[in-house]
Image (cartoon, rainbow, N blue to C red; front, top):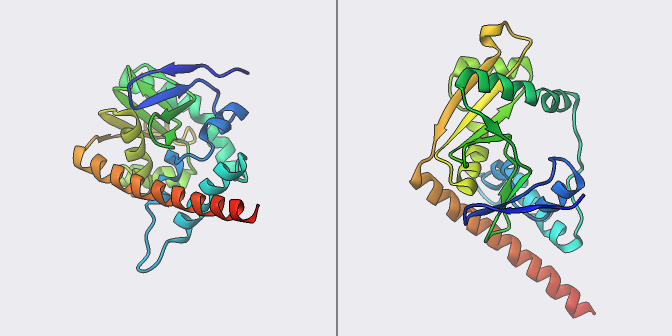
Length: 223
């Protein structure tokens, strides 16, 4: 399958490849993605959080070897969630009146970063992030009534890459009674939050670059 690079806004380029295809994995290689934004932002009282360190090393290895370092494990719950995404998007369209468009992978034009959107509205005026979780998790979202804190890094990452004004967090579980199957909450772009996030990304990616340069220097010295 050939890739079609579709120029969009100056911030990113769409790699038109089906999600989870070999071409999609190749487009993400060595890049900071939305699904790992939470790991990048992980902190502990002293030192570096293990998840942040592991992500940094993963990106170094992917750039160094040219191969995907993710083990690709997909649980039964994850498989169900992937399978139910089209139904979730359809329910969202009916409830909101928004026509959702889908893309493959959005590559940031100047940084090794990007994101895979579940959907977007208009010319990336808004973004849609869909979860089809365990029923207990869906119930927790319904009860809280807000975007879950553990998903916020991914939402902010999508806003940062796309320049969208808002992202709708969607949780869907068709095992619930009809009135409770769909949960939608909107998270609005905040210029200060985006600016802070961009600085955090720049620091992290600089660390990845420095470690890659160190390893490359060791290899050259040994040659």
